[in-house]
Image (tube, one colour):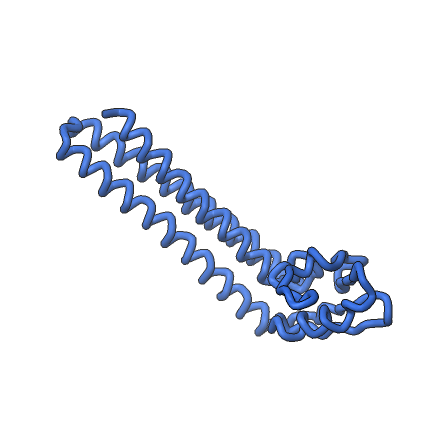
Length: 187
């Protein structure tokens, strides 16, 4: 019976970890006024009729904190890449000089910084919902095991461990959000 309990604990931990990973992934898309190649990770380019991630058709780099450069591997891809960046609704304005695409990252206004903080908090709340959902699923499974003969004290121990997992993951989400908020609000 303890094997099933351990399985449920491991399953809950894995699901909670996935929520954390997704949170970190989503937060990289929220720009803090500093150039970061991951800002363009969601851009898809029409590469000879196939929708392809930008990273597979060009090299993205940051020569300084306010500039991104996109170096296509084929010169003929400059215009499709520029169009894809404009169409991605990231609020970026690419300029090409014939060889590379240069993107200047505009300074964020105070109002825009606050909006980005709200957006980051919303993403964080989604992650917390994912963690709590994993807790509910695990607790329901443990209750099902009790009906199959799991001793009550083993059930209580398992529920306590699940709650400890939940608390640690929620605390980690909060700390990640605090760091992101500091990053966004730093001028």
